[in-house]
Image: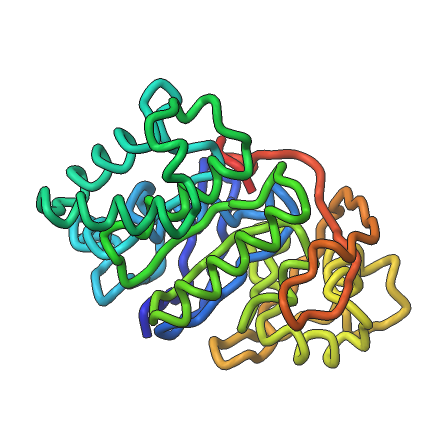
Length: 301
């Protein structure tokens, strides 16, 4: 397994931002980390990439221990944060060259991969432009491509499609599929429930716990729901659901079984947005949850 977590916990004083989560992610898998903003997604990701020490529990990423081998983790992963991670005052080409150097690529590798990246994104004409002048969607796609520049085994994407238009969201997910097809493991956090349909497996976090884990089809069947929007609502607001299974406490494992249930109110806005469908996906509504930050973590979702 490329990512394994067992009982992973992070507390801030008496508050458990992440409360004993257990899951695993295989090679080349697109794994969705879903939930309302404030559910603990970003805090969990920060522990996995070596930026935040766990309070307790165990986890390995690309075979490296999150407590003792953070440098090995950082060499093996790409990371795209919620907040735009490139430098606005540098040109597109300068950003690529800078990150290529940080990742330890040779001059020849940087030159060749820069040319390939610009061609793939159709940004040759903008290579000398400052990044601040690019539209948000192009910035996000560029940031993702730069996170893959050193060909990492795993890439972590923290709400990468937030604020972009539906067409760009679709294009971004096509880029995710391409990376996974090349064997890259993708862990993506999102509060857009329709994006769950695009993942191989998803976990849904509620109040710091994994409330459900499995393929989208398995979760919809388990909760007798027509869409992942409905699954999320039944988990986040069990009192609103007529289905007693939706709020039942059960145990979770990485094979797709249900996990420790946790109920919490989440502010949700559901709107139909069929233009965001990924290739081959059925149209679903888009559920978002209000707010931008993990409670206690200070950095989104």
